[in-house]
Image (cartoon, rainbow, N blue to C red; front, side):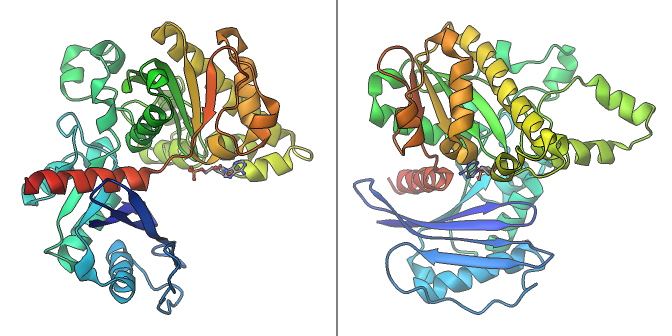
Length: 397
Ligand code: AMP
């Protein structure tokens, strides 16, 4: 049995999960929790999912002023609920593995330094992942730490899909498509293989539609194309990110509107997408509620849907057709209207909607004949726990 602590650190939050992996490979989610609002008014939540009493500790508002305090609090909670000594290892979600890290790695000093060199490739995410790694290293130096990468699943993308039409010297600097959401795609590829092994070997398009959103085209369970690129800004419209736009917009904003690079970057990552277009929220539930009263909410949802259909068309073309489409993440798993609209938009590719299934909690939402559309909940934490446990087991062989 291996007890894995999974950490997923963002700019102002550290989410954690405790996952027990038994020798036969069965997984049990023992606990989930998060520290949100680090540096502002922080909120703490932790739930035991194993049915036993949650021994919580009182948290004052504003307790965690940085990632280290958040990690320290998570460790205290684990200590009183399970005992820190019971942990086998910690697995971190790390957004960028660059061109070299295409498998999970054990975090020693040298590897951590190599990950630090990748900060310029993911300046808004990688530093927070590293903050959690550094904190855990100080607070629990003997606990093995493993990095699991969001880019790694896309290592199989061929150069024709990976390279931009830039001079070779720039490509050689590492300016190319890496793709993200790989832990989610990897989990879905495994789930699909369990659900229908033959389908999983076919032409599969996975739509990870959450606050961040992307598509991944797979053949034989391997990524062959994805909409996110050099950064997690490319591709689909997202909660607060633009997705792909004409890059000349950036030159115009900097040169003629006198915005700085940092201002344009912040606008494109944090103030655009559903939030920017609607002027209301990045939360799809709130936008659905607002469609009756605000045209801008309808417009934002229509653009979001249109972009999925457009990009899906490109993916279907490069796969030479499609056998299965899978919806996952917050919007993909829950928004029945969005799924219905996307499936209607892809009817030319052989999809037709089973409306009853779409409105129930049923996985298969396409009707009997034609291409298969499925809803599958993603579970990046379980994927990280699996990868971490596997690496530790291999080391012990
Ligand atoms: P994630 O990043 O995967 O947590 O997904 C977050 C997104 O999922 C937000 O836009 C939420 O509004 C959206 N979401 C969650 N539940 C629902 C729901 N029942 N209907 C529509 N969107 C939802």
